[in-house]
Image (cartoon, rainbow, N blue to C red):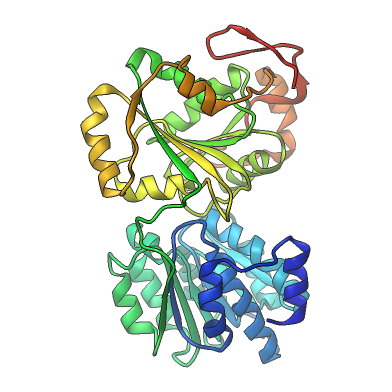
Length: 430
């Protein structure tokens, strides 16, 4: 690896490669086409970012306006943003620049970046095709193409667009595909676009992180709401997954109103609102993110200690990818599935398909197993009144359906006492 990349990784505390990186880097740095298969959180982003930057820097070519030399395709805006966050500092130390291209925001700044000349584009297929059709960029000069989360592209129905985009990149270029599975048409992309490729698979799609512990909590319908509030009340970061956008928005408001600051993430939020809520969850002291499956892939926040399936997901892939938001990059974490008695049979079938072995446990919010899992409870945070909330977030206001203000809480206004979800007083000493 180029010495500047080694130094910047070391500065970030990265001294040893993960298995997917160990296996792929010798080939990707050497220019080979590679198909890398690894579960979520296995380190795939760095596995392709390092060779992408290294090879473009080594080529030492000048990037022309609207003609990027590196392309990364991602299925969601969140994933594109997080890939760029990893790529940008690596590219910077090698004299390269990056930009993101995705829908949900104005294309003005994206077009301006392209016209100025950008080395690496991280893009979602829809907006990228729009700009290609408008003549704002060409893929004729792309030397390295990366397809990330290829199986999720297939799940979302993006493969026709991905196929058209890949067909516009030079056949002589290097191509790196990363995917957890090779089903739903991903194999057809591999056969058409990869040449003399090497497959590196560090685990099977249903293999699990040893540091991830799974819990199945069976609860009555009357007790479920209180249980969920209790699970959200700990000090560590946690992500609660719901099936619908309405549920996510409603639960985030309920938690915030009860003294646990929470933000929501779902498809009805504008891009600015998504970014603001994710930033609050990542940096501003909000411990709880309530999300739909839009966050099941592509959202990486350090030190997420707990993932809660507020309802069992519809299929096992969703379970695996939701759960993969914790126990990432060598950390440990817990996963809880909350189920009603009538959901037991379907939930057990789901877990069998996901190859998860966990014994259902009948609980209430006061059960020892629940309280042990939650651990130390966080201080009560006084909710902000609607007028104050609007003033607090007016600087970050965004337009669009479900504009999505950040959670209604006032930073730094912890009360001298706190209460658990049942209203009982608990110590605030920390």
